Image (cartoon, rainbow, N blue to C red; front, side):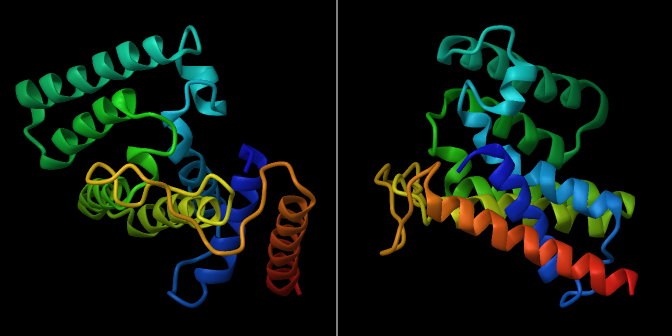
Amino acid sequence: MNCKGHIVIGMAAAVALFPVIDIPIRMSTLALAAIGSLIPDLDHPSSVLNQKILPINNKKTKKLVYGLIGSFVVVLNYIHYQMVALYILGIIIFLIGRSKHRGFTHSALGLFLFMLTIKLLTNDYGFIYEGWSFITGYFSHLFIDFFTEAGIAIFYPIESDHYGAPFRFKTGSVAEKIICVLAMSVIGYKIWIMVS
């Protein structure tokens, strides 16, 4: 799925799920669901976010830049803060650089480490809703990629095989477009309900 599709699915998941779990629907929570929905593709050197982060969009540059950023976060944390969440974040950033597409960031381990880091960072500072918004977007990305032809490496690094649903769609296909239109309809309906 392309980045626009992931954003729409992430926001649709947020507006559908938030009323059920008592998270307010506001610009900050929707924006963080959208951002969270893009994070798993940081493992791809040409992803939308990496086009902004990396000076050159290739695997070697991704390894170098994420390796340096991850190391910097760990060292800075050691010198100044000693926060568990920042150590984990540094390791996550380093692993993103080392991971191939649909590897670490598309796995249960990646989801768990992101959830743990976000929980530790947001709960300490009172941004619980924003943390859950980010995780909702992140999870929606993995969920919808599970239905694509490529699937996801859910058991990475133990196993690098990709798993997917029995019924899958191809990226850029009519099925993907229909899913995005349905997701936009959910968003539109929820906004209409909120306004009226």
